[in-house]
Amino acid sequence: MKELVIEALVDKLPDVLAFVDEQLEAADCPMKTQMQIDVSVEEIFVNIANYAYPDGTGNAKIQVEVAAEPFSAQITFIDSGIPYDPLAKTDPDVTLSADERQIGGLGIFMVKKSMDDVKYEFTDGQNILTLKKGVAGKW
Amino acid sequence: MEIKKTTDNGVLIAAISGRIDTTTAPTLETELNSSFDGIESLVLDFAEVNYISSAGLRVLLSAYKVMSKKGGMKLINVEEPIMEIFEVTGFNDILDIE
Image (cartoon, rainbow over all chains, first blue to last red):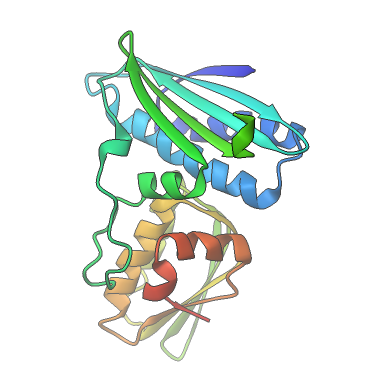
């Protein structure tokens, strides 16, 4: 398992993605899967950067565990900001027309759709969000 | 991310290359917003786009809303991984994708 502790700032997104991609590439992650994981990592990290620490800044801890052949990955985000369960949000209605569609609200929905498992817990003052992608039976 | 713009007879063709993410989407939005005046329709060439997150989708939706009151907006050369994101989010039904 590899771990990155980084200041929860949107500017740090390229560093976060570089760290995650390095682990994914080491496990021969298929390109399409890598993009789905990157999109999910972006949404979760940007959420933490924007909302976890309203009175200043704090850290986000990102843990990545990968396996190859068959590929699987588990990515965990930990922050000690305000308790926030992004999964509690109602999914947007993706059947509405352009005029009816709200700009925004798609991020978490994309995470739920492209990952095989997404879990949130608040433990010991920390938000812990875990993404899993890959062979379900493995977990 | 880079954007190359060419205008032909009121049609703006914007060829985008690279990643449209939280850090680059604001640039795309600014570029498009500054181009709406004086154009009739908009074509976004996605041949070289290899990544789009929800921040990019937001820019596409707001541009689409502006252009639908004019001559419209169309996406061309959308690659398969990007298309999948449009399908998951229902954007394939909203946007005019060629």
